[in-house]
Image 1 (cartoon, helix red, strand yellow):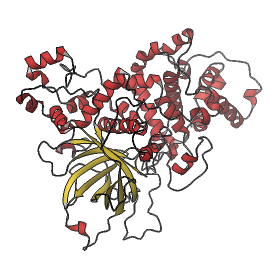
Image 2 (cartoon, rainbow, N blue to C red):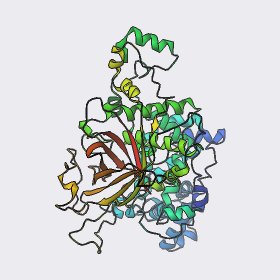
Image 3 (tube, rainbow, N blue to C red):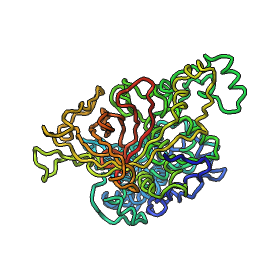
Image 4 (tube, rainbow, N blue to C red):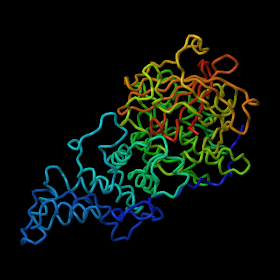
Length: 578
């Protein structure tokens, strides 16, 4: 069993590819090394709530007529081409140009099909009509090109250019910023299995081996924005909404904290809190949580804010109240949708642990397999999507189609608290009855991390002679998405220790499970596995594949006792395809 070290150097995320990939149309996006700060005079404009006014001029505003120019005498198609090329280099300047005369204004703002805005948009961003996240493709008539472009320009300016003194004002636009970033993510085109075009934007023999298709336009920009100091500030300070009730005291008193200990001893009832789950459901910003899952966490052991954040993530992950029959003991809501707050916590805990292990020279380098799923920004969360879900011609009607890419080898691991500590977290009254107050400070506590495991999975073809046919079926009471082209996939396999151990020397356990779609719109990919030891079901895993089918990030979830015995522990788990 491997234990992380408190003195492990902080994880340094991979260098953003934006500076290598961006084209001249992105000159307003400086390199990732840019601090995001601007001159004091510029800050006044950026902090103004009407910063986008020039881009959103009232169409009825009076503009003095200008003398006819040779430019306006050109054919409309040529004018449109010139304006779209000009606007692609600076959208704000295009808005300024529209204020110079009525005819230019009509070309820019009153074109019925928003042709100029569409052309500018497609020069810079991925085509939303080819987005892979949706089962049903969107049409051009459903897309407001101008609004989308303005929202993205606004979000880029806020996250890149606003000075730290203005970050608090960004909270007034938090929903707009989150919606815009999520739109950029949902617009990503599909990544397909197999070796595709050489991705010229990213230096990367590794990237070419890891991905099959050319990187999306949105992914570089999105990775850069989600790594910005401003977004980090918004996440750490506003993931808990203002309506969140303030706790009476810490869930567990810190060691050597006399005030907390005295209060706990004088009033044992003070250890009774609203459950973490209740706080999460009511008060946590789910959009910020989902966005945070798209990049590996940036954690510094020496930063108090980072330690507080990691402690809170651990409280969410190890609290048994978060995983009950109501949500099928997984990171879901009772209506069968993904609970992104819990997925964010599970992913943050497991990836932070993996980062520390990878940078710990005392641990075998076979954990280096965990580097790739955390590299290249948001690219590992770009899956195959649902834009092409036709059954392959080579798959017979009676055969199982592996539409989720289940079959193969998966690497992963799990984490857990010492059982006494887990009890003190979840059953504080039991600890109090024994005459002591637990001093479990999860901001400094380092849970144990299990061995690197390997799942070898194959599709489960129904057969009367299969040994799995006599085992209890894996079912769920939560709603799911029923799609005749993407039915649940049942699979079986084995669970072994890492590749440093030969299969003959490793204790063998059997695995059975099912992959199916959640009730989200668009749906997400849910994993359910049961690990069986010595002829008995021992552990049940429930997870969500971040990025959907084919995602290289893998699935994050929770492990619980398969029989759900009283006071049985739980913890996080992470598996990715190797």
